[in-house]
Length: 561
Image (cartoon, rainbow, N blue to C red):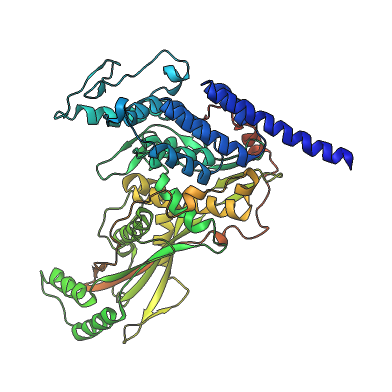
């Protein structure tokens, strides 16, 4: 009994002694020694409290960049947020209490992004000094005065460029397997956003990650890692961020946050969208077809006939399930679904080897074409396997991610669609060909690659939830999961779209086809409890061993090769 009491007292004494050392170092202005002592504390709550005090002391001494560096060591995102708010609320003043221009934000921006280890505050040779009217540093490193009002836009350009100058050079380097630490990623995003700074593009695109192939868990290092090929990227005319190497979209931070928020905390999380004609529109269409049945179209009347058909059918309703329809992620679902139907109806150009549904129909000479059809096409998950290492610390996603399925529906006189659960051969063929040409389609129309990345993120989030991977490394993901945390951009919610209907002439008669469908992302269908096969080949385990975080990884680093 006496031994237990003595051990407890010793631990408390050690903690008290460390606290006294930290206070002494702070009083002497020895911030690096105070930081080293605080990081040695075993109790996370005490450690975070002292790290906050050190950061505030550094900021008060004018060492803003060093203060932000110290905040990175706070392990809990909520505690980090509170410390950051206190740091940002400190008044900016000068001698005599007069308000001075706020150079700190710009200087902090430069020194925290452009070679952070090279500045004098952390022992390097570089320095930035404010002038009374502002600072300006050109691409060659020349520091000069900036006018009170920069009418040329040069200062704004510098501000934007300096945000990504250091990381961008490295993040754009091709890598067969780039590793992204989710806890570190969340921390860096939080520090940027809550400091009021725009995110560097390399954070927005996860350092150029092209696809997620692996999830690695490192409990001792407290790292949860996504891994896959990565490299340089560019933006196309429509705002898609594409890999220079593959021509396919890279993975987006915005999609990660939206999908994780929906999936991580819901055991049956699924999401998707539907684009369907209304029953009233289908009823009007059915009536018009009955009225014009058997009446041949004169030359030049086909387009007028089709226009009237679309007018009778009216617009189709868009419904987004599971996700906020105002998010970019939801918009991708809807756009991919609608565009797939345009290709299927011959209203958008396919890729070599793929033909529209109408072009696939074959009607023997002398035979009547099939009657009016309501086709249903939808995207769903498509993976060959999701493998786990025997110790369940590594997971490998295999497969192209998404595919198209099909069904033929019956249409009643009242305009009701009746599910049959079956698809006739031509309908199945179109879905099969579309799936087989998905890679080429995604290069021609990036929205399909965006949809596949969202599918990967849904599977990853479900794995993290089902296997309790975040708990194994002590990552709570509070900033990403809190709707009041990372600000997801929102736009108008899509509610309706013009109907997709087209026709084709066969033997001087016309066949008409309309289409419905959607996107259905349900990881539970793929990741059934206890169904993950083990990879006994050793490949997944070898990748896990090779991807271990490097020793002495700088605290500001959130990815490595």
